[in-house]
Image (cartoon, rainbow, N blue to C red; front, side, top):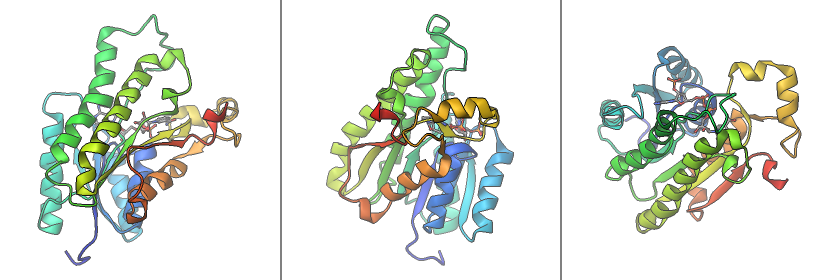
Length: 255
Ligand code: NDP
């Protein structure tokens, strides 16, 4: 490892959107970043290439979360990638970012038990077992950041089931913050508001204008707005913040 003491990070769902920006920020801070994705290999490669073009270090790892064996596959790829590049499997920073939402236009009446199970499997169950599996890899002073949502505090009935999964990940933060404090590991939740993740919705000016009104700053968030917050929580300087809910909604929760 020519960088000596450089940190290592796993960002789930960093092929695109907020996760990509988080991976880029952590790499810019000097971390070797595992760029995890589910199916979008080209997008994951673009994330890795953008990091390398900026002089950083990254590698990609494929795993379908919510599917049987998904977390195991993630850690096989992670541990192999880390070992090849650093000689061991130490993981300093874990960001549980991968997530899925209720599709637009699905009302509370339409949500099926299968939809509900899938949301919980990807957004809540997978992060729990990712943290569990990461426990032996995290050093003293390690960092865990769980990506929640402003929807745990801002009612949107069409996203009720999704918001329930985010309530669950905030519980993961609370209880593991206590559990890991003796090791100097911090665990925090970061809640984005409406954030441009590059999806087609953000190409429609009228839709963007409408969404922008929800923020106190009257614009939609950029992925980098959220990533900067996550990147700070991952630093040594954030050592005194644990178990917290960090509102990264651009003031949407001010009402
Ligand atoms: P995107 O939809 O843009 O990207 C999702 C990422 O997660 C992709 O990298 C995708 O991989 C990966 N992913 C999705 N499902 C799975 C799965 N089953 N297994 C493994 N990987 C998966 O997400 P956003 O950037 O919009 O959101 C990131 C996080 O922020 C999520 O937790 C989301 O709930 C939260 N959030 C987002 C908000 C927003 O407005 N954008 C608002 C509030 C919270 P692949 O590319 O391979 O499909």
